[in-house]
Length: 128
Image 1 (cartoon, rainbow, N blue to C red):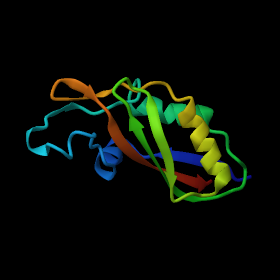
Image 2 (tube, one colour):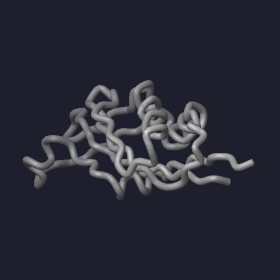
Image 3 (cartoon, one colour):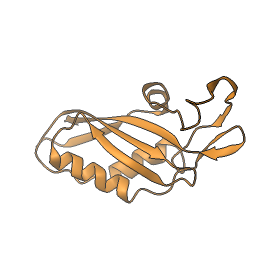
């Protein structure tokens, strides 16, 4: 029997494949100092565990990559979640449900103040 495996790329891919630009960076990027980027509580290991523990496989056997774009607000809440390159509405609904109840992130800081950041995370679904 085939089992769905969920793979979420590590921080390396997140930092290089996403726009981690906040609202003010576009206005004044020459003097912006990013002190820290937002983090899931406990880091990427806990982010992977969260997905593994709470993702409900819709059972349609799709394989491929979907992209989840979202904003980490200055208070750590997740906002503006969007799915790009959908694998189907069943997967979209399951992913949106995870982000709806996701714990607050540790917010990013820029020039000493907490700021909102945009993220896009690739998620790969493979059948084993």
